[in-house]
Image (cartoon, rainbow, N blue to C red; front, side):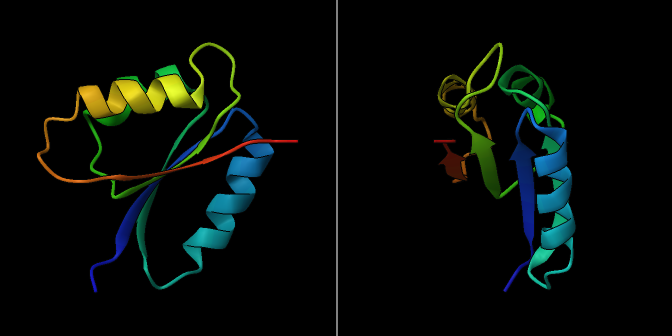
Length: 89
């Protein structure tokens, strides 16, 4: 199985760092990218190649749903990407 390239998108730095630390210990992870909001994710998406996106829904500026829609509209890779979004209660 190929190792995954994961993109973490969350406006809470401590959460991103903790999740990155946890994921970096896993054998199935090749690389972890990070963004602090939806706009930063979209701006950098053309420079990175990721398989899975773990994204917060509620973020300032561009939220996770808007960023996911924008990413899918502009995806020129011709391949599939998995989006998993989270919501704080």
